[in-house]
Length: 609
Image 1 (cartoon, rainbow, N blue to C red):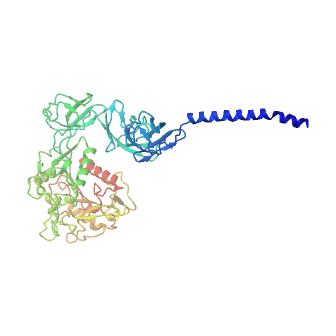
Image 2 (spheres, one colour):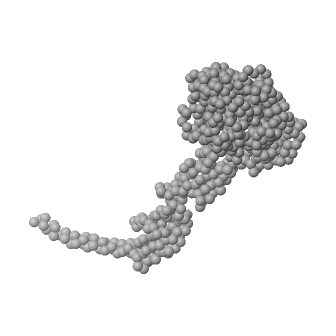
Image 3 (cartoon, rainbow, N blue to C red):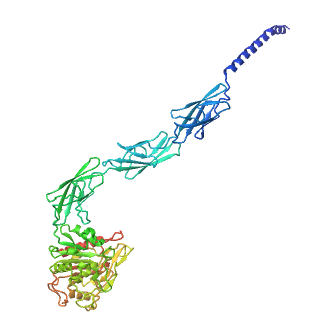
C-alpha cells in the first residue's frame, strides 16, 4: 500500500514532463519547414548536345557527355527539358563553349534554384597537325590525306626520321621519331581513343638533285661517243675513234632539270691540249667538279666488223650488234667498225680480218630474203657483184685480207669469186650454188619454245670430215661432247635459214657422203671442211669451211674455174642452224654462249695471225 501511495503522489510531476516534451517537439518542426526548400520542380529532366543525350546525376548535380572524335567543343548547341514553370541559364538552345572546362547550368522554379555542373568532352580527333624532317616542313593536305616533304640532296632517303604532332586522345603508327625508308611513300595512321575512328596519310619525300652529271656525249646522235663517268673520282673519259678531231667537241651533257653546269652543254671546247673542268651546281648551292678528258683511240684497225648501220649502236640486227660489241671488247686496241657503204681499199689498208655477220629474221626494216632458187638477195645492195664496196673487199681479199663469214650473208663468197656461182644455170664445176633453200623467204624461220635439251651445234667427228679436225686452232679450248659434238645454242627461240651446201652431187663424184667425198671436195676447191650439223653422223653437209689461199700450191684436181689470185683465207659458218646465234631473243640464257664467244675469238685470232 505504501508503494501505491508514492506513485499517486508523482503523477502531477510526470504530466508536467510529458507536456514539456510535446512543447519542445512542436518548436523544432516549425524550424525544419523554414530551412529545407522543395527541389522537386527545379531539376533538369534531359540534356542533349548535337542530338546526343547526356548522363545526369541528380544526387551530385553533374552532367557528363563525350562527343564523337573531331567535334568542336568550343561551339556546341545545348537543348534541355525542365518542369513546368522552371527556367535555366544558359537557356535551352544556346551555343555553349565547353573547350575551357565544365559549365554551370542553373535551374530556377518557385524561388528555388539548383546548379548542375556540365562537362562536355570529345574523343581525340585523328589527324596530323604538323610534320617535319629535320628543318624541312611538310605540306599537309588534310582533305586528301597526303603530306609532301622536300629534303636535301645529301640526306639518306632510306633512313629519314620524321617528327610530327597529333591531338591528345589519339595514337599513331609508325610513331613520331622512328626512322623510315622514304624511297617510296610511307603510310601513317592516326587512331582516336574511341577505338574505331582513324585517318591515314601517305607521306612522300622529294630529294633535291645531287650535283652530278648523268651522261656526257659528243653529240645528240645515237652514234655519239658516250663518256665513261666515274662519280667517285669526279672524272669523265671520252675515247673517240682513231683520227678524230679533238679541237672542237660540243658535248651534250645530261643533268637533272634542277641543276646547272658550266661550261654549258652544247658549247664547243678544245680538248686537244688536255682536260677541261666542268662544274655542276644544285639548288642548295652544292657543287661537284669533273675533270673531262678526250682522247682519240689508237686502234691498229686489224680487226674490223662491217655492217649497214652508221655505228654499232644502230645495228638493227641484235645478233650482229652483240657480235660487234663482243669484238670491240675483246680487241680494244685492234678493233674498228666500218659502215658497209663507207668501205674502200684505203679504209682497209691496215686490216687483217673482216667479220661479216647478221641474222635477218627478227630485223626491222632490213629484212633480206632469198628466192627458192637464189640466195644472193640475202646481201645488201653494196655487197652485190660489181658494186664499189664489193669490189674493194674483193681486191683486199686477193691481197691477203681474211674474212670471217657467218649467218645469212655467207653467199658473199660467190661475189668474191672464191666459190663462183650462177643461180640461173645448173650446178657443176665452176658453179657452186647452194643446194638447199629452206626458210628462204622474208623473215626466215623462227623456232619458239624449244626445250633446253634441244641443242644446236657443230658435228666435228672424224666421219663428218676427211679426218680429225678437232685439233684445228679454231677449236682451241673448246670441249666436245661424245665423239665430236660442239654444242653452241639451246635458248628457247632460234632464228634459222636452211641455206647451205648439203653435198657436192652433180659437181664431183663421189659427192656424198663418206670421208672420200669430203676429201675430194677439199681438193677441188682448196678448202678444209671443219664440220656439219651436230646430228649428222657422216660427211653430209658443209656447216663450217676454211677456204685456203689459191695463190700458192694447189691439188692436181683443183677446179680451174676458181681464180688463183686469192692470197687471203676465209672461214665460213655456212648454216644458221648449227646454232651460231650471238644473242638469244626470248631472254632465256643460252647455256653455250661461252662456246660461241670462244669459237669467235679463236677464228679471229687464227685469221689475224
